[in-house]
Image (cartoon, rainbow over all chains, first blue to last red):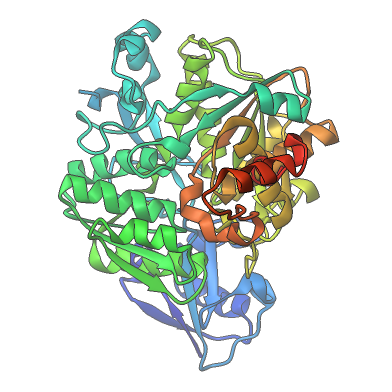
Length: 90
Length: 424
């Protein structure tokens, strides 16, 4: 199962864990699986229409999924999915 | 004391409220947080006349900035000139043109001193002894300088390909400057992780809601210097997309306090074509900002491929009847020369972007030639010399005798002689 790193501010929604494991072959499937385990985490990641919230950025092995196939981006079991809040300019 | 004027932080997406802490996003949906004020209390405590009696720094608007006590950092920042640009107006074929010139802002010659003055004053209030930032250059210098003056430790993270003037301009103040292999977006992401891990006050990460409010001072000053009037058009450069929104927020706050007539300003944003995620969003009427993976432009201070405020900036441009445009590197350099030759202002590359976009918008008819326009120049050309050094004609070299000089001057008519202004 792919590993999902949970940033500090989201850990209360995941029983305090720094990382979780999710089943699936795409980013969307893995995050959905993790969301089934922790519904509070799911609502923080996804808007009602099933899209990621606008300011949730997701990376697969440090690559932004917006430069790949978004939630359809394929993942292998050895991949690590990172969740990072959008951050501002300087 | 202004603590009674700041209510707290509010998520711009879901409206959830938070106290005044070092927090930049909503834990419900990661939406950005915005400072909320008690405008009724401000209106009772402050007036235009009271502001006008204060020293000419950005802190004359302190009740409208998010600090709880008196400012402690950047006390001389702001109140830069608003120049009526007659020769440039003539060159562009418009009636009323102004330059808000933050190329001479104190102490580090960019508008970033405004946001840093607020962020570091807030950092002191919140008890941080170490501050930091992710920067494309101007912020690096400003955090380093202002932290030094305030006795704070500073970590400044920059991409490894910045202009030398900006690298030196951060290093001289004794800050710990770290160059990161990659572009600004890589640097920013690392800073977010560092802020969580080390508990430092990163001005544009966990102190961001306070930091961003500093940009409002540019809007307040524009309105005051126009005689408590807001212009018909404002053209602002966009990196992360925050500045344009904060200038407009300032105008609306003045309107809400009854100090200016209802705001009709149309907001225009400028980017380089090599990094245009926000203008592209406006032009394609997209609902989300598509980031640019590998920004390529000489305007490095605007080279943020993933602009956090891009969504709100594009929405603002549409809602005010403005527009977003971008220009290539040649147009940027041409505009830098035009500004220097007509108004004696040497802006950094971002200033070239802003002026070149203004010219384009005028030609497109999107900016009304008979209206009033303010161009925001946000940084100084001294810092971006290598961007243009190969594109500027070098001076002729002669022997120290009058005959050679006369020969040189007499060789052609003055208007197109080699002594004419550079680039003429």
